[in-house]
Amino acid sequence: MLGMLRVLHTADVHLGARHADLGNQAAAQRERQFAAFRATVDLALAEQVDALLIAGDLFDSNTQPRRSVERTVAELKRLTDAAIRVVVIPGTHDVYDRASVYRAYDLAAMAGLPTDSDRLVVLTPDRPDVVFGILDLAVHGFVFPTKRAPRSPLAGFSAAADGRARWHVGLIHGSLAIPGKTDTDEVVFTTGEIAASHLDYLALGHWHSTQRGQTGGTTWAYSGAPEPVAVDQDRAGSVLLVALEERAGVRFVTLEERRVGRTRFDRLEVDAGTLAGQPALVERLASLADPDLILDVRLIGVRRDDMDVVADEVERELADRFFRLRVRDVATAALPDGPLPPPDTIAGALVRDLQASIAEAEASERLDESLELRDALRLARLMLDGRELAL
Image (spheres, rainbow, N blue to C red):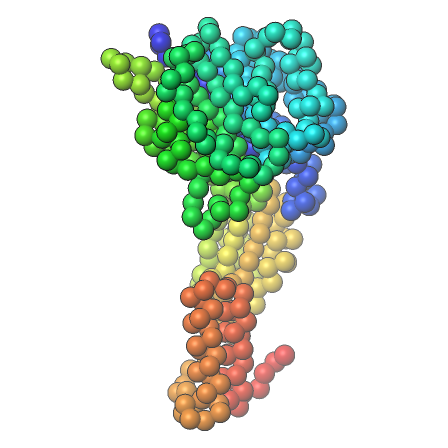
C-alpha cells in the first residue's frame, strides 16, 4: 500500500545458547533456534518488508566461533541482497563491552557490503541512530557499553523535533518498569519515558514472551524469542510484522504476530484423585505426544493412599514422545478422618500448630514447605490414631 512502511521485529534469538536445562536435547534446540532465525529471514523476504529490526541478543554470548557468525551473516546477506535494511542492537547477552562479538566481527563487511552501506547496521553508543532517506525512516538504538545501564535508555530522549525523517522507530533491550519485579534488572525504562519519546514504534527485546501496548502516541512491543530459549517460555515462537501508515493526518501502527518457531509449550494439571494409578497417567500423557511439544505436567489435588506415582519414571517412559516432558507431583495425601484431639493436649496442640504452619506456607506460596508440612500432619494424625505406618 502506497505510503505504508513495513518492518519485521524480532529479538532474543540467542544463537549459540548452551541449554544446560535440556540435557541431550541441547544441540537439537540450538538448531531449532537457527531454523527459526532462517524462517524469520524467509518471512521478511516473502513479505517484502522494508527493514528487519533485531532488538538485542541475536547471539547468546559474545563468545562465538567464526563459523557461527558467518552462518548468521549468510542469512542476513539474503536480506541485504534484496535491498531489505537490517538494524541490530547488542543486548545483555551479546553486550557491547570490550569483548563484544560486534567489535570482533564486522557484520557488514562479512556480508560483502561497502563501508558506506546502510543495508546492515549495528547501532552502538558511537552510532546511536541511522536514517534511511529512501524509507523516510530514522531508527534509534539505545545502547550502553556495559551490561548494567547507568540510567534509563530513554532518559531525556524525544524525537518530536527530529526532522530528519517522517517515521521514528526505537530499539531497546531491557525491561519496562514494574515496581517490585524489575527493580534489579540491568536496563529499565518507564511508560512515562516511552510517551515522552514521541517515537512512532518502540521495538523491545529482553522479555521472551510476546507483549504489546501503547502509551502516549507510541506503540511498543516485545516480539518475544522466535524459538523458546528455556522450557517455561509459553509465549515465545513468534516475530512481529509492523505496519506504519498515515491516513488523513493520523498515524496508525498495526502489529501482526507471525509464528516462526517449531517448539510449543503447554501446561497440564491432572487431579491425582481421578487417576487409577501410574499406568493411567502414562496413557493419558501418551495421547498428547508431540515431538515439538514441551509439556509441563503438575499432579494436583488429593491422592488416595493406594495411589503411587513416581514422576521420574513417567518422564523416562515418555521421553521419546515429546521434545521435553516434565512431571511434578504437588498433590497432597488424604488426611485421616475423625475428630481432632482436644486443643489443651500435646497432641491437639501439635496438630493445630501444623495446620497453622500449613496455612501460613500456602498463603506465602511456599509450595514445597506446605507439602512437607501436610505430610508431617498426615503422619502425626495416623500415629495419633494408632495406625501402623509403612515407611
